Image 1 (cartoon, rainbow, N blue to C red):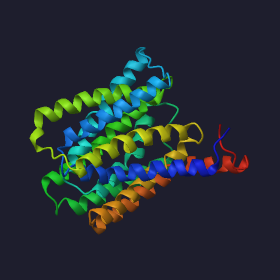
Image 2 (cartoon, rainbow, N blue to C red; image 1 turned 90 degrees about the vertical axis):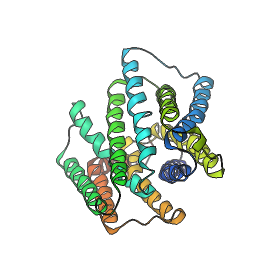
Image 3 (tube, rainbow, N blue to C red; image 1 turned 180 degrees about the horizontal axis):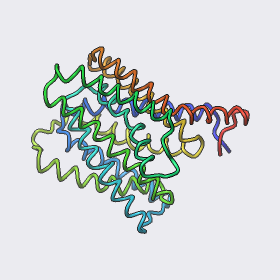
Length: 309
């Protein structure tokens, strides 16, 4: 039995809202826990929960040659280096700005797909959308370089680097990992990420700097349970019922949520350059996906809006 439109809409909204709120949760947690130790704590809980799901559902975790490539790439380029960059970078820049910079992710996926997947070349419209997005990023930097510290500038670069490494890995998964269940990739990748972040945290940060208060506990639990397990589970459920292009629109929604929450909860104030750049980034996302979105809704109309099996 196919889920109804209401269920699918709720699932999409849930993923978008939670992912949009994770930037705020990370920012709040950093007030009490150093970045690498905080990320390791998040992964400790998430790995345990996902491992239970994999075990109880009997999900196979293959270790053939292609699977090993996917696990190695995901471990390093999604669950280790990128999370270290995100947590470190968010110490120095607003949560809303972090989410806007990470919104370059779809553009980077399109570029790496063009370079590494022969069947996914860049169209003129996608190239125009990517150009808009990166002009937006340049505009954001042009307004912030002169008024922020060097570490804030490096923090912005860290978020962009995180988006780039995760985009590269996504293409690797698309190329070699079609036979692997997503939760299998997550449990292996997060386990390695936990080891990497724990080692990094214990060797560079002081455990005595950890303050076990409501902010620390709430942030870690929220990011582990909702920001990781609930969102990934819901996202993969959605993948089975709607086209990927529809899910790509989460990249448009999450920065809006993050900027709104950052302003309401933390009183973050973003300058006019940031909002102007964000507008170009979000417009670029829509333009880049324009052809696919048009085909998606045209297909829905031809089939009377029936959900995909």
